[in-house]
Amino acid sequence: MEIQAAAVAEWISRPAADRPRLVDCREADELAICKIDGHEWVPLGDFPKALAGLTTDSARGVVIYCHHGMRSLRAAGFLRSQGFENAFSLAGGIDAWSRTVDEDVPRY
Image (cartoon, rainbow, N blue to C red; front, side, top):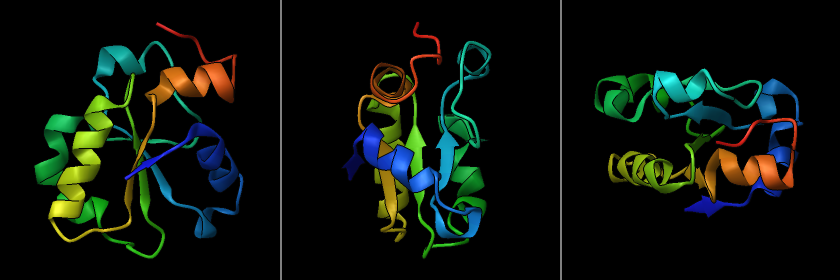
């Protein structure tokens, strides 16, 4: 259910129609600090009411990220429990992204 930052970087470099959606599940104050370009924002607490929108394109799939990967793992698990098997969590969150893919993304 987890995917490494390098694999996500490769996925999101594809044309938009061929890549998974990238969803940030952090809170607004965290989003103000840093983000990964091309993300959609759905705070973890909003996942139940956003379920229909999050699962519209199962073939494309979704990669969810948070700060260190714990909330996004819960979010991916939630989507999978609702029958959306193509949901993944960015292992290590945006912190791992900053350390291994894009050091210009601030760490906090």
